[in-house]
Length: 127
Image (tube, one colour):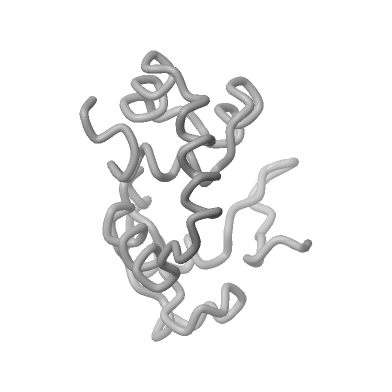
C-alpha cells in the first residue's frame, strides 16, 4: 500500500507532508503538536488550500471515528485485545510524552491506531 500523502524533500534525508507545509505557509507558523491538517474531500493528494482544514487531534479523531463506526462484535473484540496489550506505564508514556508515533510503534510493538486512540482520549480515559 502506498503512502496516502505527498511528501516534499526539505533537506537531505528529511521530508514533510505537503499538506502540512501548505498549511504552515498559509498560517505563517509551524503547526503545533495537537494540530492536524484534515483533507475535506478525503483525498490525501488534493492539497488545494480550499480542501484543507486545521483541526485538533481530538476533533480529527472524532470526525473519522464517527464516519467509520465500529460495527461488528469481532472488530470490537480485536480493539479490546489490542488495547489490553498496553500497560499502564506504556499508556502514560504514549499519552503524555510527545514521542514520534514511529518510535512508539517500534519500541512498544503496538499499532498506530492504538496510539491514536490513547492520545485522543478514546482508550485509557482514566489516566
